[in-house]
Image 1: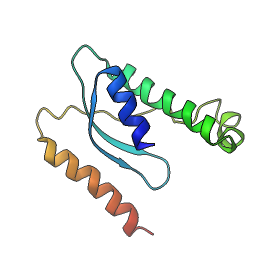
Image 2 (image 1 turned 30 degrees about the vertical axis):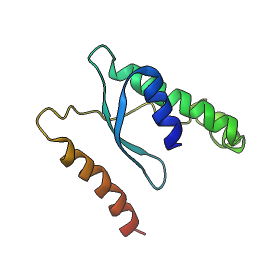
Image 3 (image 1 turned 45 degrees about the vertical axis):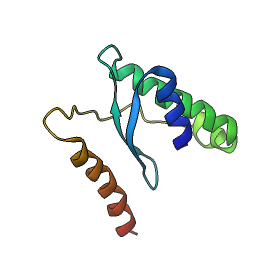
Image 4 (image 1 turned 90 degrees about the vertical axis):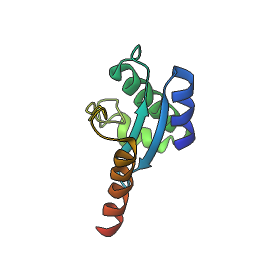
Length: 106
């Protein structure tokens, strides 16, 4: 999954500076993109291409998600924040801390 996300970023001209895949159903990303790329397009590429690949590689997901979730693997929502006022290391630490919190909740 991580490899696919990095490949998508490379293909469309943005970079994933930091990534943490959540335990159950989410992904935290620190993305750097030129102003010409919209957040909407970046999210559409990431969610759409990754879902297509996951459905292809794991057909059992189609029976669980494709029909039950209105033909979507991912929720249509996402959270985005510019890090202009925060440094990149602080955001990367936050992403890492999210994984630690999930592990400690078990």
